[in-house]
Length: 430
Image (cartoon, rainbow, N blue to C red; front, side, top):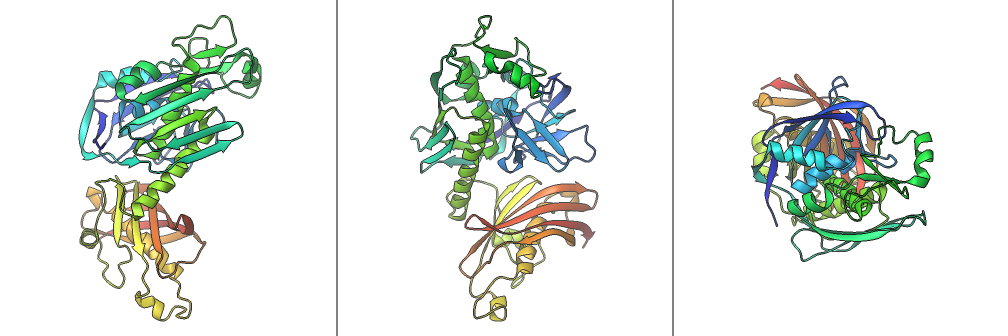
């Protein structure tokens, strides 16, 4: 069920201490153009590139979601991401004066109320939409997460909790996610911990910003629940936040048992793999992309040196994905190991550079210019590309400043990385 992308009508600001670090951080959420996605900007880190809320930027961290890009990182962003997912907000730039998102009341409700007060507006482009067509199963110790195809046009979450502490009861909850049900049933649920683990967590450096107001302490007689089954609902809130890293609306039924951020992230990675398979088959619904005629209108390259056939996805100025169908009729196969033809690694890098040129030249100030490759760094050629293969290229902008741009590129065949590099370009007048 497709819909148009959405963003805020106006900016909102909020401050507070991080739940784990206890540090005071000021945050500002601003409207963003269509196809931007949710991105974070560290205002206290010089020349920090925006950090997209995508699974490829996730870094391992205990009891929270952490995103990294270059020298900058943001963490405990799952509650804000859940607010975006639950309210169907797709494009947002979130500025932060420190590393950890303000914890507010330990739930997503404070952000939800700010976003609703600012207003949510539709944009012209349609959101990416992925309908799961096959079961996926993730297991990590006693935690499991199953994603099943669903006839319901929305996402359904079912969570089954089980706690090691015998003094604390588990529970289960199921909900079809809509903005209305999210605000009513999930958004108010606060983060929690077991009374039996408070001391160990504090010694490990967690919970420096936790209070009885923003954290439910299970097994403590003084604890009062805001909602029935509040811990289970908060687990669903965390899962929703991690699902925002998919970058698409999902039609599926998810059943989670003891699942946490690690299993949530692994599920998202597997969903991304399936989406990529659907991209190569042309089955995923999207509006962004360019055919070969549009590519030739932007790039000066022509046969036999135009090495990308189709751009299948463009996210603003930050990310682009393209396909190159490798045919035995490619002219370089006549002389490059003709008995065992392989696509030269330098041409794989050239195809990557051409896609980077498409991405960089989309900026208005680069109109009428050429993106000239200036340097190549961190090159790795990891596998062979042969006739009949489909080379999937993905580039991500690391930095754009004045007349230069730095891009990280990756090439895959059937899900396996075959090449990667960091490319530096300079923009020159034609």
